[in-house]
Image 1 (cartoon, rainbow, N blue to C red):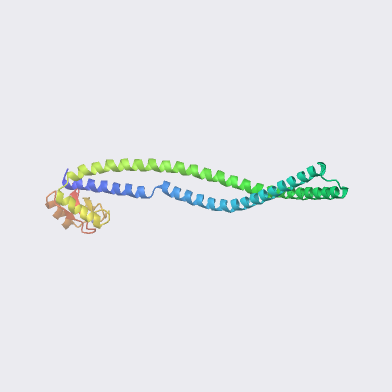
Image 2 (image 1 turned 60 degrees about the horizontal axis):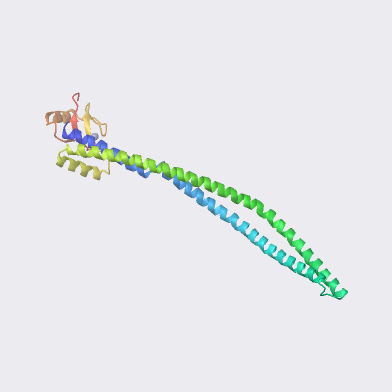
Length: 243
Ligand SMILES: [Zn+2]
């Protein structure tokens, strides 16, 4: 195998390495993770609006329940006082009974208010539970996609490492000056094709045919001599026998 043939193999391997880098940078899992993150963030925002309403209702309910407890304690104390013998005047006893009745009425009103607040809070609580279930679902999916991503990256890493090894041994077969020239051209062309073959009188890089004069000149030259495509400028390796 000539130096140029090995260099063509190096170029193929470099192209595959570039493809692997591209795939590493454009993993479908990364795209999916970005989508999931944005869904989760939208969900969190929607949930927080409902959570604030729900919290306000609960706080109001708690405030009223505290008031009910305090009215109840007062009414109970008044009721005890009514029967502990400390009140002797029937007028005072009547006034105290009126007060107890008034406290109990107020207590009943507030208890109705509490029920109403609970009714308002219930659908909001259900909505929050739905948000939480959806959020857990998205979180689980994120975990699965993340695991898939790890596997995909490990596979690409293994492939890359095998190709690098192969590239190393192919590059060792190529003349040092030639590989330097190749690497310079390749970095200038940003990873493009810099070396081709002449096959059936055509350049494999650009597909264009060469003049018979050019082909004759190539034929007359040493097998290892480097030519340049007249059309696209790539370095040209071996001429196949039928050209
Ligand atoms: Zn060409």
